[in-house]
Length: 220
Image 1 (tube, rainbow, N blue to C red):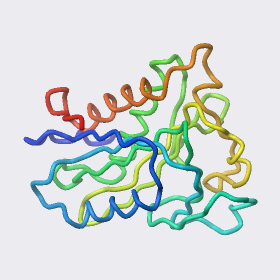
Image 2 (image 1 turned 30 degrees about the horizontal axis):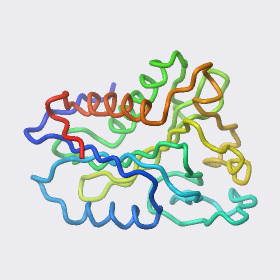
Image 3 (image 1 turned 30 degrees about the vertical axis):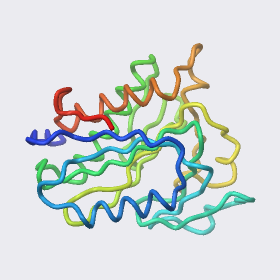
Image 4 (image 1 turned 120 degrees about the vertical axis):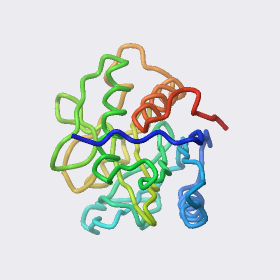
């Protein structure tokens, strides 16, 4: 069973950053992690990326089948190859695991549970898999991917959550090296929610899972 994070005195900061270039966000995350100290507030950055494939530390070249004009960027996160694009929520989770008194597996579990709870809000049944981080709907299709990096006891990178995107680029790679089909919320419900509605619900589930209640959440 995953540990329950210990509440902190400072609030968690939620940033909504809109559509952003991957490389700039990658650099910003690393800088934030390097400069933070034991009093720095935890943050979650919600955004969408311009189209890009990213190759995690376990990513193999053969998983990139036909990238075409979409750039491929090597990343220091865990995991394999994935796609980022408009209509997909990316959440970068910048938290101090030492201060929250949780381990990496605990963080992965609570992120997966937040995604499952968010999908449940729209009556979509989903679950994680023991052998491959991420969240999968009942037919086995993958709807969300995880990839983290821990440095100095703090996390960066996070999750990708398919909401209402162009799914064609997923066919240009072997997602996460699993050979699984990808899906998104838009294709699973009769009345698809907006990406902002899903972001708001996911933010609520993530902050609750991290041990922050509503009065410990600061939105910027």
